[in-house]
Length: 184
Image (cartoon, rainbow, N blue to C red; front, side, top):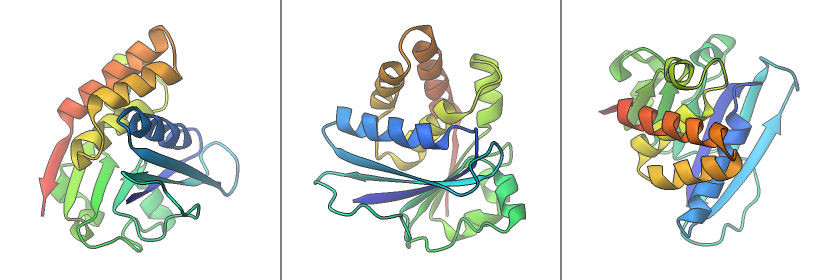
């Protein structure tokens, strides 16, 4: 079982991303679980979301305390005292929304593999001024290889029918291709 912790701010689409990630896992015949956690329920407030992916049924329904992967939608959260390295397992992956190179990211030192995508730029270019969740899912697929990009795109199109889903799937594919991955 792979456990994932997602850090974001309210309105950035992390909770939706976890749900779509689970739908993608199910499309591949895997098991998945999304566990949202809300503190201050307002736009811009820190949000922690958790997900699990497994080949077997998932017996636990708790938060994730020792993730195999951490996804950070907004590096500004680090300035608020949030530490993405907290509790990570040896060999953990980091997926970060940033225009920096992976080696330039301060938290990357506690991760075995770091994938970086400027998800805001990709999203704005392909969809417009909307949350970068599709781009972050593409970056997650590229960095971890735990879920296929085709399953991610199909789940996006299922979750958001019509033109909206097609645009989000194209955004995820573009992010998949543009993600820079660094292994320590």
